[in-house]
Length: 278
Image (cartoon, rainbow, N blue to C red; front, side, top):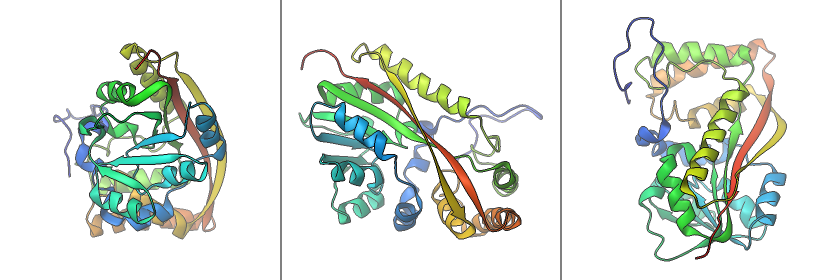
């Protein structure tokens, strides 16, 4: 399990973790690819349609495609999708579902002269070095091609989030994610997407970025939420004993709510169009 980059003084707030700096976590999601694919939610159809309509053609590159959840939605919308995925197990699952995938970290991936009408990153851009990723996206986009970075804000109610955070700190105090707050305001996530926009501006190769937002809800039973939790970045590398301790605490909290709860999702996107000539 990765440790914090330096020791913390007593009472000192932990330094924020930049996920792309703990790449081994990004490459751990394939531990149970089938569970990941079944438990993780898809993306708003309005978001997919807006990206497709705002791109010059149907060729899409999916960065960190995972098991192909977003890619299949774009295929259903008429796109030809190529996935790039660092975890060979996730890539194998996606291939079995009909997606062409190349195994590599995006920053190191070799496009071999290929270009695309859209580059998407669905719940994956935080695992990419932001500056290198922005430059690479510009290099593989055709003129007027669109980069779309998007993901879910899915903080459960405090009655579920707080027992989870307490159990996580107890069983995995050495994790770089242990110091995170139980629930983070939406503005925290929006600030992160604003930073992505800043990085795109710094390349000088994109038009003015846009910020999109989609709000929706989904109801979870106890079993459904406990199936999703082990697919999240902070839990994929825990041993079965520590994972069970966290799931038991969260399960008890959901039982206290009557066995289910409603999740208020917000899907955020930063998107920009590539400028210039080939």
